[in-house]
Length: 66
Image (cartoon, rainbow, N blue to C red; front, top):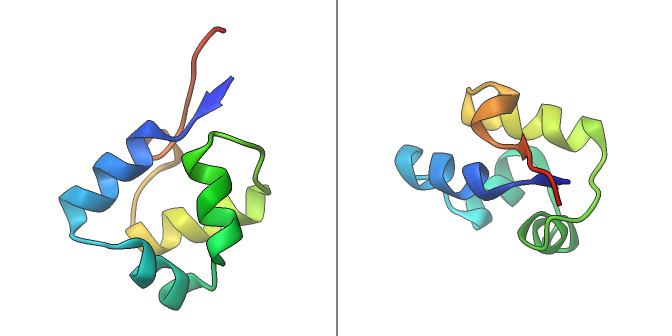
């Protein structure tokens, strides 16, 4: 299972709010909800997040066994 717990830590460390993410890279509130619930998101969304946060994929997501 892919979880996005690290995303919220990275965002806090960089001082980026969900509002700023929506404005910077066009991620809508539905996608933010999906990220919070650890649901499926498109790889282009992950790309946008990494670019907006200037980070690597492992800074925002990780695989954990169920």
